[in-house]
Image (tube, helix red, strand yellow):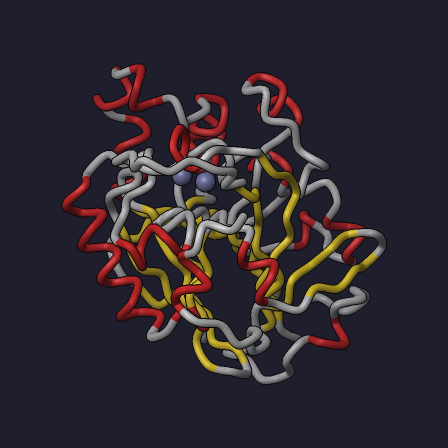
Length: 288
Ligand SMILES: [Zn+2]
Ligand SMILES: [Zn+2]
């Protein structure tokens, strides 16, 4: 149970209601034309991509959504990170060894590293994502690029240790937290819908990297099933209800919308609070 954390003064006391903090641990300076969309357009410009993990807390539990990647993976892919997001959790008063539940939204390297850094956590993953990451598609070099075999092997080891919970489609996970399968970007990204004091918030992860992906119905360049991606974009809107309640996986615009604060030099965003007023046009404009 979280108690000594500097975040504990903000923890909702009612079970089934949570605070959500986004922790950004790195950024890559991608370009709009070359890097970010399946179908190129005529315009180019900077469109950076933030790397995040999400901390979901109340007075009863802390749940982690995704585990980021390590310095090893960062070096191998020439994607430097500011810090390992799991190694800094103690600075927030969160002991990785005390966490019971970790939601892995999908098995891409930037979401599923560091899974060896938890002593007892259960890992939650979609059936379709594990099957994809361990099946015949991984014979294809272009499809396995975003996966790191060490992460996949770690999750297989956790499976044999009885520490993986498989989910098939949409399921209630814990009071106030449900999982929703959104295929298209990978075998199946699972979004987490989390009840907060302002209502449910959808942590969409890479079912939509940017607000622009689902609002413009323009898939991210890494798409294994375009029709499924389009269906997932429609579901994101239904599950979230409004752009106020949908958090894309990598969009730096999230930082502009939500209150940030610092704990021991680590910047967090309070996603359970109402965002700054904005229009859909603000979210899809390419002013990065
Ligand atoms: Zn991904
Ligand atoms: Zn990602």
